[in-house]
Length: 473
Ligand code: ADP
Image (cartoon, rainbow, N blue to C red; front, side, top):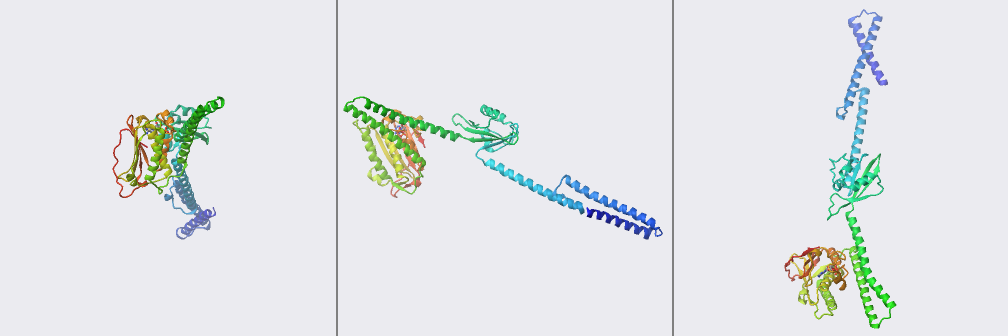
């Protein structure tokens, strides 16, 4: 303010002196001192007015700029208005920086919410959509731009959701069908709403289809295992009770004990298969540098197969006709990379199935071929009853059986092909089932070239034929 007063005074003095000098020296040299004083006083007033006009003009320029302040268009002023302009420019620049940073932060938060694997929707006090991410748009069928400020109740036309939203009890989540859900491909969503601010809501949605399926599978599995164990246990308990309460002949007693041993053996098989499955699920992946001799594997499986065939066809005159590669062929089969015990378990399961389901006298061909592309194909072909196409895609499910009683009678657990599928998946191999009712089945396994090693002279015939009923896992 001092500087302003000084400038006012200076302009008054300057104008007063200039006018007084012109008056006295050029216009009225004869003027009396009183007249000179009045002229000087009037000139000083004039100086004050001139200063006021210039000052007001500068203030008006600053105010005009402030109406739409653009940093580049700021007036270049001196004095107090110039200083005010500089300070305002500084304030505006600071404000702009803060707005920019705020926008940047908001964009970062929205980008993070877009990247979320779950649906996120912001709702206002009336339940209208303020913002939603892409996942929620897909899950509920929103249009992220068009549906802004639309009421969510009008967009999600699910009675369960509308009841949940209307009840205003958001202490628990709601599991509902997703928009893309169909009877053959159900999609389940878990939706939960959280209140915040003054009546606003945050809606989070999560696809729980896989979780629900896994839970259903777990329940089925526990129910199946319990059922499989309960049956032999009931039989065993019955025999124990009979042995305890009835005076039996020695012959009858040993017959009962043999039947009890059979049931106990059945339970042991089941537990062994369950343990194998759990080891396969939790174990480290098989090595791809441990090479297993295919010849050794097949010779071992052949010995076991012949033993099993004898047991199965003991009471009948005609055993199975088993065709395995001969000694000369075995020499050329090379090696396969993986876990020897797992590969043995898969191959022997396929062989045991072929023999258990093929009646006495039936033919079983076992083959191992290294193909032109470096892959290897192992196949077990039987002349058994064959499998109806409707069952083929489900055979590797746990406890799935086409003929339940035949499976049980021959000591099956219903887990053999599930074990085979797991082992093959772990080795990057594929199981193919070709079967026709009345004509037999062929279960073949294709190992990837990276897991097959063969001597240079081994022939590489091409893959022969693909039968009508075929299912690849
Ligand atoms: P299981 O212990 O009952 O044999 P698997 O998982 O090994 O269980 O096989 C599942 C079902 O597939 C069997 O119950 C049987 O109905 C059918 N199956 C498997 N292999 C053959 C085959 N070679 N011929 C006919 N049916 C078969």
